[in-house]
Length: 259
Ligand SMILES: C[S@@+](CC[C@H](N)C(=O)[O-])C[C@H]1O[C@@H](n2cnc3c(N)ncnc32)[C@H](O)[C@@H]1O
Image 1: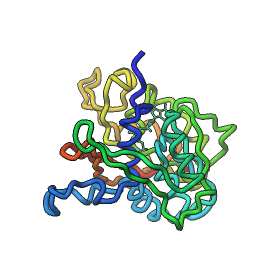
Image 2 (image 1 turned 180 degrees about the vertical axis):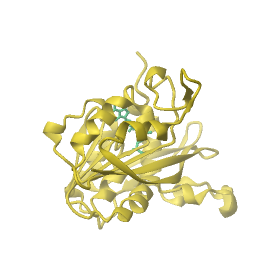
Image 3 (image 1 turned 30 degrees about the horizontal axis):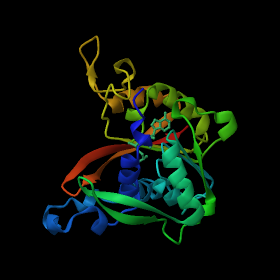
Image 4 (image 1 turned 135 degrees about the horizontal axis):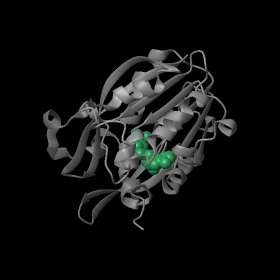
């Protein structure tokens, strides 16, 4: 069986740089200031900063599903006394746990071929890391009876990486606090059969009646009985593969309120 890409050391390093790297660490000096898409840096922290304060939710419990190496979970801890971060990758959760316990972790950035640079990821000092708990878990099998209810549920760039995104969506009404709990679903909607069988895609196809189905329409239809859509935002992000190769994408964040 092929290895889960999110368990590889290459992606662990890419995600540590993506979540914790500074502009100087991510962008090569030769890119200059005018060419580099600086507005796409610091994505996990930016999602929390730009989407969560708008909602004026500043207490209670928050859940970060598909948390990877944990940056958004730590950012949520600026506001929420209790944060749970869940991810399917044991390697990512081990790194997030080391960051929680010690505030730092060393890793190597790929520059060119086998040439690398050692770096250290650090959690901002002012964040109360003890507020955060990480666990390995499957977003398609979330147990609301064990996890409890949350005032904020965040899933950043997750739904198009799940084998059964519908199962994840089905668990949300039980996880988000009724009467005002918030849900943020951010995704670039990169549907790929490698991760999600086509029959489970939420968008990016033409249905039997000839309608072009977009993911936001499916999210609206699925979540409508329990959630109101407050707003959507377009959030660019940049993932460095090596010094001369980057993925520039735009995630759509949809922000929902539990009825
Ligand atoms: C594209 S990454 C996004 C990670 C992070 N939220 C971010 O914005 O950087 C997708 C994440 O989903 C995780 N993942 C994939 N399938 C999962 C599942 N079934 N349950 C929980 N997490 C899963 C991966 O391990 C990976 O950390």
